[in-house]
Amino acid sequence: MIALALMAPLVLTTWLGGAEALQRVKQFPLELLLLMLLLAFLCWNLNAMRMRLMLSGRAGRLGQRGALGIELASKFALCATPGGSGGPVTLLMLLAQRGFPPAKGAAMFLIDQGCDLLFFLAMLGGLVLFSLLSDTQWPHQSLVQWALVGLAFLATVVIAVMRYLPSLLRSPSINSPWPNRYRRRWLARRLLRCRHALKVTLKLPRSTLFAMLLLTTMHWLMRYSLLYLAVLGVGGHADWMWTFLTQMLAMAASQFSFLPGGAGAAEVGVGTLLLPLMEREQAAAAVLIWRLVSYHLYLAAGAPLFVLYSYRMLRRSPAR
Image (tube, rainbow, N blue to C red; front, side, top):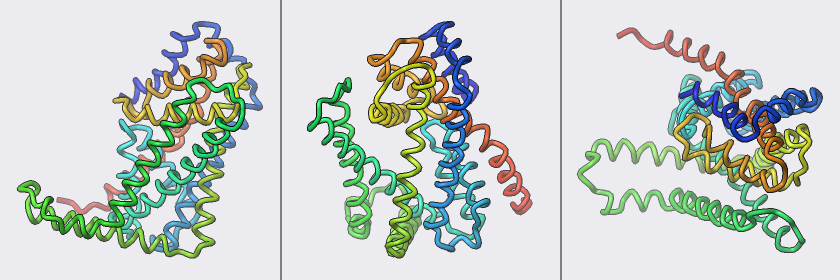
């Protein structure tokens, strides 16, 4: 499946743009490619810094180098599994190796996702307002409004569940025969520990919380500028805000792909949304360059660390 995911961008680029698209990839400016690589490296470090702030010393002494290793290994697992299902599991296991229980790790992961959600809600809200007050030429503008509605609904559900979790767990409606009473108690304890750790994290100093949101904003602005740079490098012209929306909508759709990293769905989604603004070969070449830096690079950088941490974990496991 990983092999298919690695081949998907090249196959789709050849199918959509043909030999001319591959020629544009070969002629891609080296300075722009180096800038994209630098942005990717900065994104990794920003996420590592955010992780250190969220943990706030609760996972032992964790420096930037160690946090970066955990970030890259987790991102490799995220990119190497369908729907990114391996990313959170890997993160929780690596934190557990440092004495940070999985229930508390899940709370930290929720905070991480919550910061991302707040950023995208703010960005989408601003872009929707901008599209209404100005004469924008974006295609598929209705997708922007629906994306905002979907994100707002998701945020409301998560906040409501966490807020009323004790009442939900005491509700008679959850007393089903499966899972059994022991499993339900086991799950309830961990959910409550997660909720408690969530509250502890949210009680961090406001300066720390603000720094986390600032790092989140910097990360996503850099990460979602990669497609814009790829479009410029192949000679295309597109508004930065539209490339931002294109990546956000396409990456959401990629969650439904059965291939790791949303391969196939991500390329088709981005390519389809770029086609109204540029030629086919330009869109195909831009998508290939973008995936090489935003997906394949994560696999290449995270794979050695994932293997190393897995080897250490297996060595520490008691013999059976």
